[in-house]
Image (cartoon, helix red, strand yellow):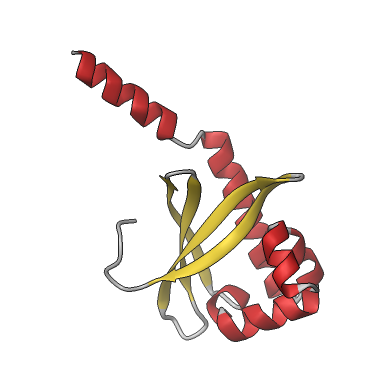
Length: 132
């Protein structure tokens, strides 16, 4: 019985509160909307301080996204999947359909920051990698 109670408590401690999940989805959605409008200045506001220091300007950040993540710059469909806690890291899985209709699973690393959640990394998941 004590083991079951311990497992339940660990599961609850690792769970992401629903409010945080909603806030994370809102941040990612707002950044994608900014990309769709070619508003790289607004899109840059959702990036973590580390990402901002790497790219320096919204224009350089926007160019990186256009060239490296075209499915994020111009998605035809976005669906939020699971959110995972990996140690101290929080990753939101997002399925994106690109302009040609191909599906991509993206992992967004989210960190708390000034004014709410910030996007600290985006990784394209390879086919067959992990669960969603």
